[in-house]
Structure formats: C-alpha cells, structure tokens
Image (cartoon, rainbow, N blue to C red; front, side):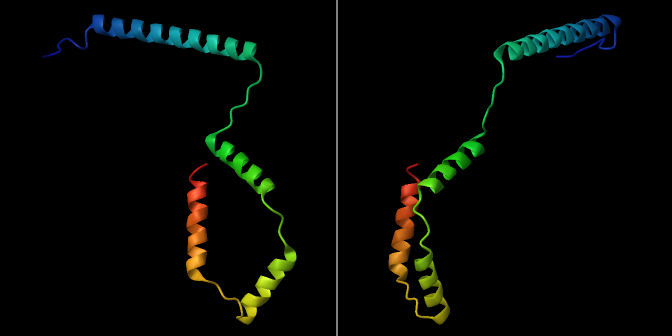
Length: 104
C-alpha cells in the first residue's frame, strides 16, 4: 500500500477539521466532568496503600499491650548471656505467623 499526496491541501484541511473536532469534544467532556463533580459534592478516594495502613493501625490497636517488666527481664538476660532461645521453636512460630498473615 502506498500513500501519496500527503502534503496536499485536502490532507491539511482534513487534519485541521479533525483537530478542531477533537478539541471541541475534549472541551465538552471536560465541562461535563466539571458539572458532574460540582453536582456530586466532595469525595475522598483512599489508595490501596492507605487501606493497608488503616488495617495495620487496627491490628496495632488490637495487639496486647507491652509488658515492660517482661521486656526488662529479656533485655537483662540478653545482655548477660543467659537468654536461651530454641531456634526450632522460634522458626516454627515465625512460619506459623507468616501463614496466618497470608490469610488476611
């Protein structure tokens, strides 16, 4: 297929008409959207990240309070080397927590 006479006056006139039509349609769409926005009132849209942060905040509120006495005991045991951690038990608990998180 070949295209000839691309630079002709007819082609230029057609492009001008097309551009004018597109601009008119864009303006009408913009006015219609603005009218719809005015009639609709205020609206808030929350992103998925915002929803995730909201869920995290709810989970944090539902979490048990920090037991400062227990934290102090563990910190002291860690510092003096008397803290014994069963790595298998720790790993099992971590995997259990990870599998529970995948449910939500």
